[in-house]
Amino acid sequence: MTAFAVPIRPQPTVPVQGSDRPFPVRRILCVGRNYAAHAREMGADGRDPPFFFTKPADAVVLPGADVPYPSATADLHHEIELVAAIGEGGALFGLAVGVDLTRRDLQNSFKARGQPWDAAKGFDASAPISAIVPWTGPTPQGRITLSVNGVTKQDGAVADMIWSLEEILVEAGKLWSLEAGDLIYTGTPEGVGPLVRGDRVEGSVEGVGALAFTVV
Ligand code: MN
Image (cartoon, rainbow, N blue to C red; front, side, top):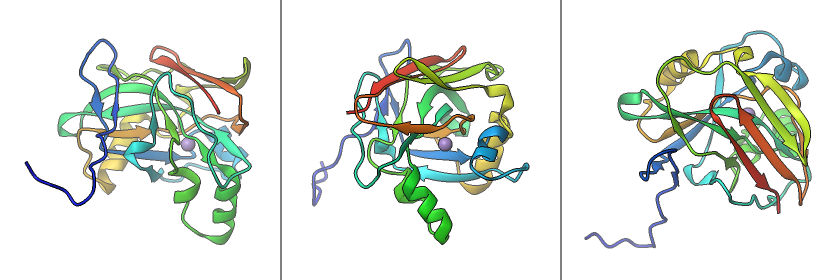
């Protein structure tokens, strides 16, 4: 058994619905501006090629866990997203519901200065996710919604994605070798907005599932 210089962190995993074998997370890719109305609310327009950013694998927040309000922001935003889980050979393994938490104030500052988004997107506990549902066949096209304290904030349709899940996998595959354990957050519909401590967030993707967490 190899001895290591510092303790090894546990492998981040996400539960798989109907299975006692969890999904080991390799890395998290995220698509920016993949719904036209959200792109417009962020000040962009048109069908630009999809662009990606990343979060560390251990940013996942598992079902039932709270989300600590992150440091260094006064404008934490929710973005409800359909998540693709990649299996053997880079093929789709399953789907989940996720929230791409964003330090919007930092992101706006980085955008204005042409700096990388990493600290705005890839912070600790920035990727809440539901259990992964093993998936074959056509991807869902139905409603994708998020509420805060019971008030609906985001209410879109997966069918309105600018780049479909199939296209995202192709485009991501041009940039990375997709491997088992990769998660891809596929973008958010309009209606993103702030969260504060104490907020109860509930999200769902029709036909896939739901997630809920409290910001503490
Ligand atoms: Mn997003």
